[in-house]
Length: 321
Ligand code: DGY
Image (cartoon, rainbow, N blue to C red; front, side, top):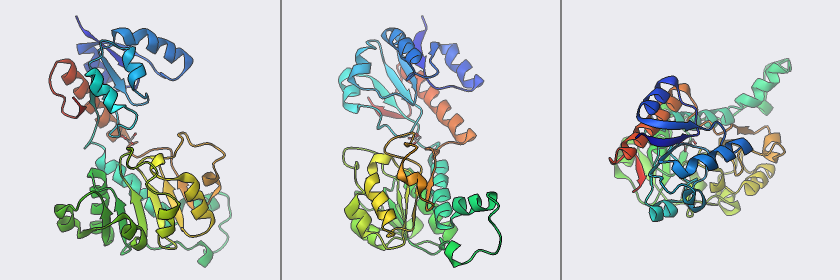
């Protein structure tokens, strides 16, 4: 008998066919809607696998799914999952690293460039028919090339950012992570340093750490106060890594030149967030990996992980078990 999979992410026809060939699939378009919740409650007791990205999974949900073997997340970040609960229950969790590294680093650089060169703000002016004469100093941006790039976290995405900064823009690269990575230093001429030193010396600070108990609130008022006057902050990690209220104060106080934010403490961001009224903030709706090619590759990776786990094999991208 085929195993039962609850799918809560739409898949391309080819991937859906691959999944349906091997398993019995229940598709729930929006598991957070009242209708989706009801269908989820109905499906979980017989589910052997879950595939999607939008659900928080911890003890409560796991208790409703006594047959569950594998959860395949269509994301690299696993902050929505209670890893200890997975271990207790003996359920495998997989994610989708590697396939989104370059795309997410591209997003980071897009935010960095857009904020430095005021692309969104000035494009809005052109659209509004307010381009009457050549721009003057009040609309000038700041250079990116040859400025110091500070990367907080030096995993795959941090390294892809370092590559872009070093080779593409001749930027000296500083990074902060647990311990120095000599191969990173050699490849990108990068220098490992303390967080405080990075904040003091960088023109651009880019956050790439995963959200964990240790990184929640990592950048608060004290840290923002250490940043160079006129520096730019880019967050492509997770909203709670940054104290948003402190960022709003730092931007209001004029210490920072601007911020490029792909992630927020609450997503979708509240429409009345002061961040959305600031011309020097470039907000994007968590699009780190959101390209056709990358989202398809992530979904393919998740399907492969799920099917491997359900066959009793060790999935290629296992996070737990
Ligand atoms: C990830 O994969 O974790 C990205 O942030 C998209 O959610």
